Length: 120
Image (cartoon, rainbow, N blue to C red; front, side, top):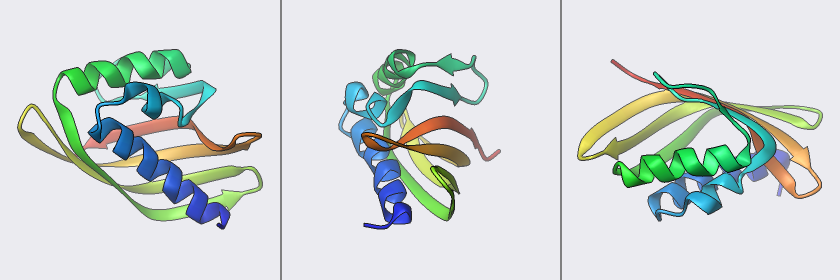
């Protein structure tokens, strides 16, 4: 697979893990030094904290997540994805956009920075 295809598969893996209620699998998509910047919340630092964050979101009813990349730009061992997301939380529909910065590691591509927000 190309780097773009690998990054798209990585992004899809996060959504699939969340949708199956598996916060550990979602966290495995991140680097150890990952930073998540969720809307309206504090900065989340590290893979373990990402697992705790995603478990809380799953427990609160997050599901039906889809992630659709508009662009994936590869800059050496760094990938930048910009796209759209949908899902639901506790029966309420969500739609928004995101930017992911991924790094090519010895274990393949992993997400290092994750920021998203929701449409008004």
